[in-house]
Length: 416
Image 1: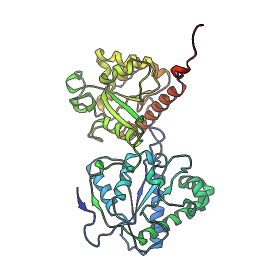
Image 2 (image 1 turned 180 degrees about the vertical axis):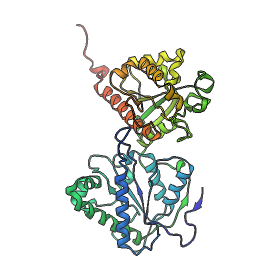
Image 3 (image 1 turned 45 degrees about the vertical axis):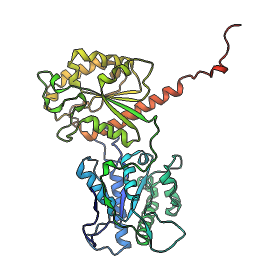
Image 4 (image 1 turned 30 degrees about the vertical axis):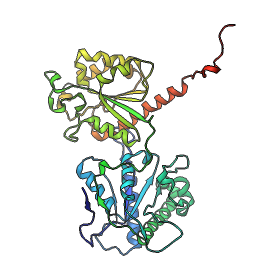
């Protein structure tokens, strides 16, 4: 893609693009969408901007991505909006600066030139940051740290608590409305004091993140224990499988790509560098040595437990009970074959993953309660994020607790 954003000289351009990190649900089922609070903020900003300006009916006020869907059309829409918006509003949170997608949004916007209509003491960038939560104790990436922006101008409670707290705590209601009003004013001021020509609509997925690259230690290994199509047992449909074991797609038709790619996207958006391999390629790494050198997430297809030749390696890994290896059993309750053989699959899982079950580390999306909601791709993404954090926390704890040997010249001597 390399076309101008505007469809004509007078094409309407939204005032702002709200850039935020999607928050997963608290649990797999029944929880409200936490991103609805961001949607309320977006709506309140749009209403305030309408009051401040003379925008006609039907003119786009802003843009907020309400979807987590990946794909070409989704990426094209983001690129088009970033190429045309007048102000970029990043919603600061620790999760925001871990998100590769948010880093790409920031990068695409800042490729555009910014011209000030009149000289001022403040250098305008077209970026108006907002605090979703306080960031005092979190290091900002260089591009954010270089911005000259005084958050205190939106109110002391806003600067201390962030917009999320002002929205959630009733006692802060008036402070929330004050912060939104001043944020809307700031967006309009920057839009009117600058000229930011429409940019090129570039390929979103190929853009780099504007944020500092993750530490080389921030790696997550994802392995998949499943089938290739030629390996399937007689009573299992091949619709969910491909040529490689990493091609497993348990959530078709909601997702037409391998689950491992969705898992890698989750880890990548958290700021990690994921690798994806078949379990058999990782088994020696996971089953030998003291501890894996990086946190791991194992995606388990319970149907593959029917393969007696391969299942012993998973059983051995379970007996090692490594906290830095998180095991997830994604399955789709819309998969009729899995529903028909649910008891058999549950028994297989219990026999192979006995240690994990005994530790009450219930695998994701396994519904033991009657009438529970079916597993879904959205639920998997939330569980994958939690699995990555569990594995990383255990991995870091192990390295903190491990005693270190003194240097050669400082080791105590032994013997006379």
